[in-house]
Amino acid sequence: LVLHSHLPWLAHHGSWPVGEEWLYQSWSSSYLPVVEVLQRLAAQGRTNLVTMGVTPVLAAQLDDPYCLSQFETWMGFWAERANQLASHPVEAKRVVGQYEAGLARHRMAAFQSDWATGGSSVIRRLADSGVVELLSGPATHPFQPLLDDEIANFALAAGRADTALRTGAMPTGIWAPECGYRPGLEDIYAANGVSHFMVDGPTLLHVGRSTADAWTVGDTDVVAFGRDLDVTYRVWSPKKGYPAGAWYRDFHTFEHESGIRPSRVTSVRTASEDKAPYNPPAAAAAALADAHDFVDVVRRRLGDLRAQRDGKPGLVVVGYDTELFGHWWHEGPLWLEYVLRLLPEAGVKVTTLQKAISDGAVAGKGLPNSSSRGSGQHWTAWAGTAGAAKVAHNDDLVTDS
Image (cartoon, rainbow, N blue to C red; front, side, top):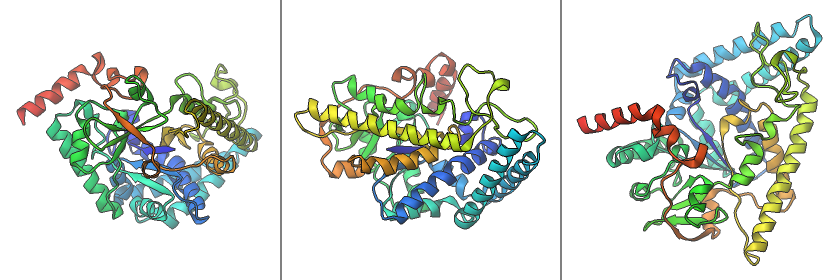
């Protein structure tokens, strides 16, 4: 399981500090609870559960004194808004307000206990415990295939050095932003000491390589892993995944005076004003049921792979933005904890990308085509008509320099 914490403000097409609201939302609803899940599992001696990438520029925000101070203030306003909703004359809104107020108090206490001096110390403790494998990446989360080689090399070196400075160790793996790849990037990776990265599943499948194995790329020893989209999409797909379930909290519906989400999804066709009230116990039960379903899907996938490969075991690699768990999908951290506990009970070995390599997951060589994740697994979103002017401007800047 690969989680990647990227730039929350980028989703809003803003910039730091214009997009601070996105940072604070993701910090409170994703980073805090996901870390708590991993801390609980680490305290039980669990190791090699998750491969986690943290974009260097996000790490800088999580360490920045201004952001730390403003985030604590933001959480104080969050708690106050929840307290006000908790006294609402409508019972359903009052119940949600009480739930939200308790959540705000808990997250504020967690921040003050663990995060008040910065996020890097929190991330470092997780990595040192062995519960996660930490990934680095290029400094500013650029779409690497469109970069000049010299700039791509500099961005990667700067990002990895920043991660080492903040966490005390140099991760060998990276998260390639948007799983973007073009032939030749593996040479830049090798020159910078990178041992492995991820591509989207079709990137390997299109050149006859399975996502059930890892592959060295080109003439290097750099290893590529591909996301198993059939399993990944069970959670978050272009059409429907677990977060669209009827009992989960609806992300798009607000109680406008408080800014708090009081409704459940109900159905994807239900208008916001007609959605049913959020019911936390029912949502938790749905998360447990969907966790069991996911474990069954993974077990069947692994069983099918073993049958197809004459008894040879295979990999199932799934990758998500960390912000899915909590920010976009309120119950995501709870689902994640259920899954990480249920998979071993079901006989599935949970591991990290780095540990998979040492356990013999590399099956041979391959040279993928240019690709990325997203619609069609190609570069349209980054270099298509809508972005052509920016790409041309980027080329001009490189030439001028």
